[in-house]
Length: 206
Ligand SMILES: Nc1ncnc2c1ncn2[C@@H]1O[C@H](COP(=O)(O)OP(=O)(O)O)[C@@H](O)[C@H]1O
Ligand SMILES: [Mg+2]
Image (cartoon, rainbow, N blue to C red):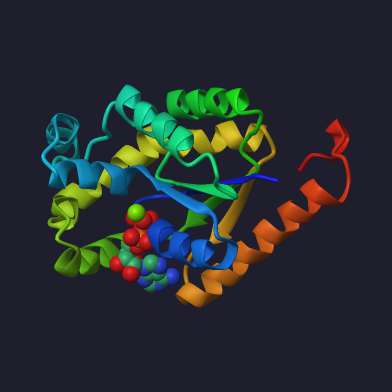
């Protein structure tokens, strides 16, 4: 079966780092809207130039832009064993749009992992990443704080959306990269076993 996973959490919580380990282990296809947008900016496409205005001040890029990118990637990667959505959805409008796109393909989100890291640790990690990543949105503490505020205002409500669907699992995302990955692997394997071992009746959904 196709397994669809959302890695959810504030900037700096380790979504990109853990996505790489998940891909190596499960051969899922990584869909990072941040990576897609940075590639558009690098290639100076019209979409990239528009997106840059938002990203440079730590704001979210408009919903319709990222939804269109995800939609075209879902079509382009029809052979995938599973998808990891990294950094998407970031608003409840995006979450609803994603549910519709997946329903059209007779699939759904199976698991949402909420990466939990204290705010001061996030800032420390992002300032450190900024020294090597070349990412303009990691360059100053001011932009980093704006991104974290944007996350708490617009993105964290998306967690409630998935909690209501009984799909949300919190992951303590501090400790070594390996420790965090082991926690993630346990949750994926557990969910996968539930989905494949027996038909899921409504009262068994978790
Ligand atoms: N478990 C961890 N412990 C310490 N640093 C981490 C951990 N996971 C990721 N990082 C570091 O934090 C920064 C942000 O990680 P990243 O995966 O890019 O986060 P996100 O994609 O959620 O913004 C990176 O510099 C990364 O090396
Ligand atoms: Mg990332």
